[in-house]
Length: 272
Length: 272
Image (cartoon, rainbow over all chains, first blue to last red; front, side, top):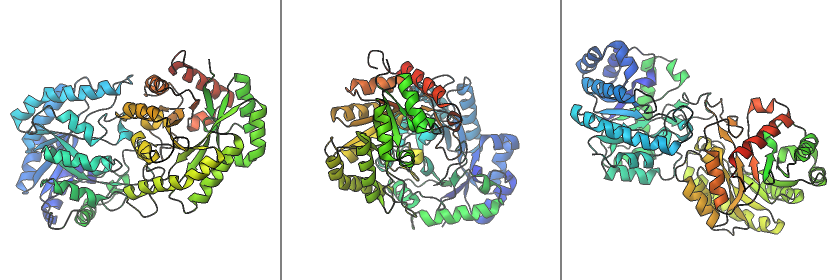
């Protein structure tokens, strides 16, 4: 029943990696999405061994991107290498906001496309796919100038689908009436590299980063997303990825159980 | 030089209406955008007399909408009547978020269109235009399911342009790469009923409502918006509408002076 569920590590931020891995294995979970900072702290080869010895796959590594930073090229190459070392098929890209003192969002978006193009050869070389993640438009200035799935697909289009895909995250895309057509388009082009579930809670907290809720606690039609993504033929992992201070304060195993329950309630029966 | 500048009353929330009107007249401002609550508190006929005796026009009345509330029909008819009494040509609509316990954003959007259709006869009768305002997608759940200028224009399309237009607000629309084409479309269809300037500040405050900055203090290409709107032939008022606790805490006349300076810096020379 939970063959395709994956726990994104950010959901249980304070759960130490070894306990998280043991907890996932015990719960019958088959994959985890990892974060670079946490993996680096633990040690990349040691983390790779820990996860694989427990029989878990790595669904994705978060995150590359931030192409508005001066060191983006070297940093993203390192991120690709880390993903390869972990056996993660996908590096999720949060592309960065406007450069300092810039108001030119068109130029920033064009730069994201160019930067991804420069990373394609290394991505193909190490066998890790870059997944452009559109972030909610409220993050456009400071985190990600890619705001819609349509933009992400336009940016991916010049490059081979084996090297560049997109990340479909319900939290960032639910408001967009064009998202259903864009999910179909992504499927046709075989661009869906990651699918992440989180729910929308109102009111938003200060800074708006930590407003993501566990599946089922908010107002998003998650089942409709799961159906739409499944209808494209996507059969990869479905990560639950939530950032929320109150969720983080709770025991990891308890949060994991709720994440699984939320996933089960919205992923189409027979397709999980 | 400031013939087309208008001060939206929300920018100087705590400036009493009589002082605001006197301050605007003294500064050479020709129009004010008013808010229902403030006008009701002062008294509608008394407010109308105050504003007109000072030689000011009313650029718009904020706001109707909230079609997810049970009393939306009567409430919006009253709002239209108040706008007519004030001589406001336009009633700005904040269409409301999802109904309680609903996740059906498509149905909520369709209902907005139906509700506006029901108000059209009264709008034509009293000579006040309904202006559908798309709000930033971060308000989709709780304030306004109309998230893009394209959606607003689609909703307006079945009705006469004399009865239903749109409100172009830079704060809500700057992230959207399709907004330039939609401004052109709005112009061709003679749907631009209001144009509001506010800047985007990061980080967002809790609840995200009070993050709007005075023109020039944030990252929006306001000049590009002013050019695009002017290029359609729009020659109505340009309201500065900012919600920000620190702005509200300052003396009204000082904020007004900065709003005018911000307007002058971004509205094309010769078109002001």
